[in-house]
Length: 325
Ligand code: ASP
Image (cartoon, rainbow, N blue to C red):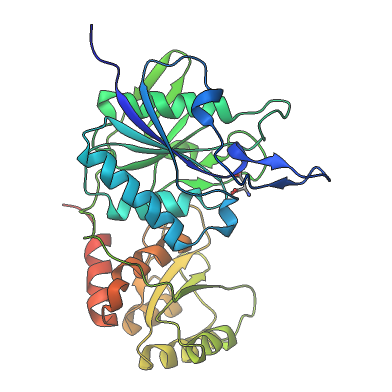
């Protein structure tokens, strides 16, 4: 008889572990969610640990690093995989941060719920069973960090919450590397992971400036005055910005701030195709490529981590983003 795969189940709060308050508003649970006890019998040896209690909108980098530490221990202990039950709001951020830092082969599978336990159509347990099946699957070795939600398996660099209320919350659907349902796991693609970073404390002083019609440079100037070390601009289209913003970004660069440029578009990525994008490229802004602004922010935070100078961080971030041969 083959041994049951040993998995670590990390309780990291979120809707999957939430409870309604006296007014019916969902609030984070204080103690453990007791996820293992809520599951039907499963063919895995589960160890449950709590990394965070509460809603994921309140999480900090330190909470994400606690998850990274637990993953590292699971790898050292030779477990088959890790499942992280997490709030959906910042799941893509934490999953990506783990992907940047996880050097091992064991899969780290994030999941959660859009509907609270006990609500009609609650999706948490179905997602959790799917995530456990993926984490235990031999073909999942080497996928890095992934989000399994509503039957889709999405690798962390591309996964995004695209629906704030429905059960198929994460996409883009066409970017799924596989599917999971009651018949099992079908993992069709293996993501080409970039080399992970050495363990590091990410720089918290990296902010995102989201632009709209007629935006000027005031937010950028205020952030530089406040002493940020990195700014990611979420521009339009291919990473274009109003010309009015450029002088402020030049001032930020001169002040030693590491710049990044991303787009609000879900697909297509950035390119210096237009005048403002080309000006940003000349300024040395790190282009997000296919990463979202939120993920580029985390990449810059890791690159700037442990107090690394902006020039070195820029090189590290560009190396990570470079197209793979
Ligand atoms: N606000 C919740 C959270 O991210 C949403 C969820 O978990 O679905 O924790």
